[in-house]
Image (spheres, helix red, strand yellow):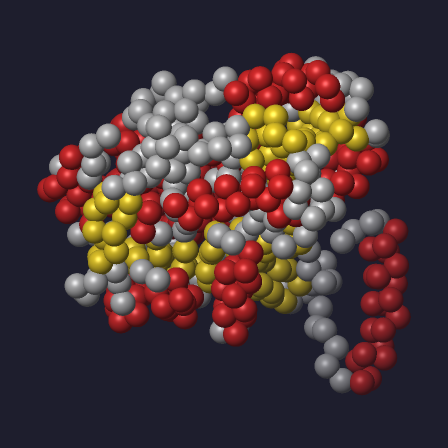
Length: 520
C-alpha cells in the first residue's frame, strides 16, 4: 500500500490552513502516523507553555464580548455551526478515518453526536441558565432568585479516539454558556478537530475565543489546567486522577471521564440471535477504542451456548478494511502501542488457559495495526484482561446461573462507566439496571442509547470519573450560581434580643405551618 499523507488526502494547502489554526510559535513538530498504512501522515507543530499562556490570555480578553452578545446570538451561531458540520461531513469523515483508523460508520457516529450536542445546547442554554425564583426562608417577607454567570475560561483536553464527538460534548456547552475555551488536542486527531473548529469559526464563533494547542501532556496539558477556571479531561484513570489533583490544588472544578471495564448482561429471556447481533457492535465499535464499549459479557447459562455460537460467528464474519467508505464493518487500531497492548492481553489470556472463540491475531495483510476482533471464554482473575481495561477489540464471555450472579460479577470492578442489559422484558431490565454500579445503563443496546441522549447526563462512578457531561448538568458545570435575596418590606426582621423574644413564637408557628403544608 502506498504511503498516505495529509497532502494526498486533502491537499497541502488545505492541510496547512488547518494546522495554521494552532496556537504555536515553536519550530518543534511531532510525526503523526496514518493507522491504515503505518506511514507518516504529516508533521504537527507542538505548542509551548508560553503559547498556552498567550492563548489563554487572548481567550479571556474575548470572553466578555461573547457573553454580552447574549443567548440569542450564541444560539444563532451554534445552529449555523450545526449545519456546517453536516455540510462538511465527508471531509470530516475522511479525516477521522485517516487519523484514527476507524470504519466510516463509526466515524459517522461522531459527526451525528457533535451535531446533536450543538443543536441541543443552542436551543436549551437560555432555559437552563435563566434566572429562577427559589423558595425564600420566610415566604412573602423575603424573595429569592438564583442567577448564573459563566466561568470565564474552560480548559478542555480531548483524546485521540473520538476527537470530534468528545470535543463537542465539552466545548459546545461552554460556548453556549458564554465562556471561552482553550483546548489541548491529541496529535493523532488534530486535523479532524481543527476542521471541526473551523466550522464553528465560520459560523461566527470568534477565533480568539477558542484557541487550540498541541503538545506533550505533562507540559502543555498541565499548562492548560493552570490557565483555566474549570477543566474537562477525557482519558485514562491514572492521568485523569493527576489532572483532578492539579485542578483541586488551584481550587477549580473538573469533570473527568476516565476508564471503563464495561459489562453486558444477557438475561435468560433474551433472544440469543438478536442479542448477539447487537452485542457485536457494542463490543467492537471503533475497534473497542471507546470508553463506553463492552469488554465483558455475562450470559445466562440457559442460553449461553446459543448466544456464544451466534456471537462468535457474527464476529468472524465482520468485514475489516482500510477503505474510506462504508464497505467495512470495523477498521484498524490507531497505533503500534494499541496493537501491542491488545496482543499482550490476548497472549496472556491464552497462555493462562482461556479459550479463543474468534480472532486472536493481528492482520498485517490489511494494514500494520489491524487486529481481528477477538472473543475469549474462560477468562479468570489472574489474566491481565480480567480486570484491566484492554481498550481494544477483545471481549470475554462468561456463563452465569442467575441474575444475581450477573449483577455481582458486573459490579466486581473498580470502574463504573457504562453497562448494558439485554432482555425480553424491559421492566425486568430496568429493575436490574438500578443495581448496577454504572453512570449509564443501556437496555437492549450497547452504548448508543445513553451516549446519544444529549438531554441526559453522562459520566462514571468509582474510578471511571468525576462529574457529568450532556444534559443540563453538562452546561451547569461551566457557570457559577449566584443567590440574590431581598426583603419585601412587609415586616421588619428582628435585630435585638427583645425583638427576637417577641417574634420567636411566631417564627416557630410559621415553621410548623410550613411543615403541615409540606412547603419546602
